[in-house]
Image (cartoon, rainbow, N blue to C red; front, side):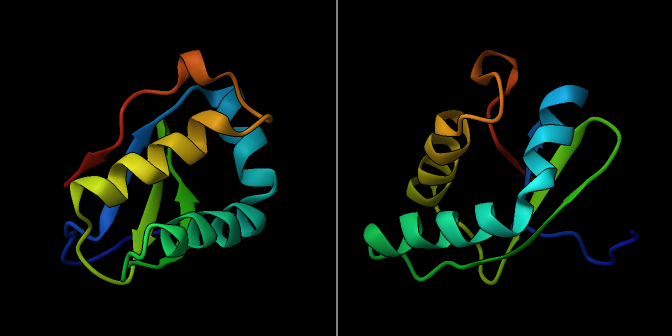
Length: 94
């Protein structure tokens, strides 16, 4: 997938291949759960979709994210049971 105008609406999370494979199997559920977690902190951000590339997953949001939004997404990903949280790096903005 080629995307024009990469922006701070995209969160890059470097992740191992096995973790990425397991996480992407249920990406639609993860989108719903991340949106619920963001709603709980009264954020205006919504996760639109998740896609993967060679060494990471990218979470695309509807607006520019704040540090609190990043923290919430990081906590959600590290808390999922389908991946080894020790092999997940910190989220990065473009």
